[in-house]
Length: 54
Image (cartoon, rainbow, N blue to C red; front, side, top):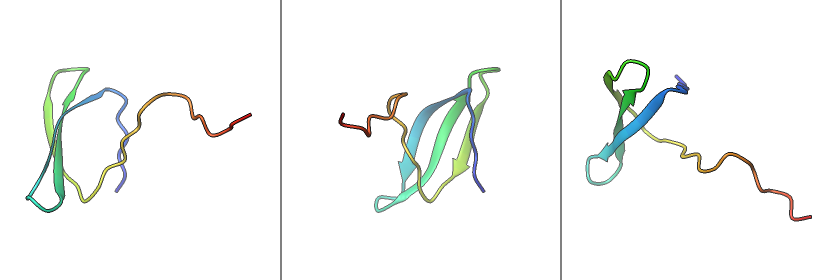
């Protein structure tokens, strides 16, 4: 399963002491809180890829 939410604000990433197990987030459209079980995440930082050096 893959999930993409453009209106989510991560509030917590948690694990069992050795690995990631889940993530809590707030839906910014209605302020509801959600908890999802995960085995991994991809963190996106920034908006423009800087892969070309020229």
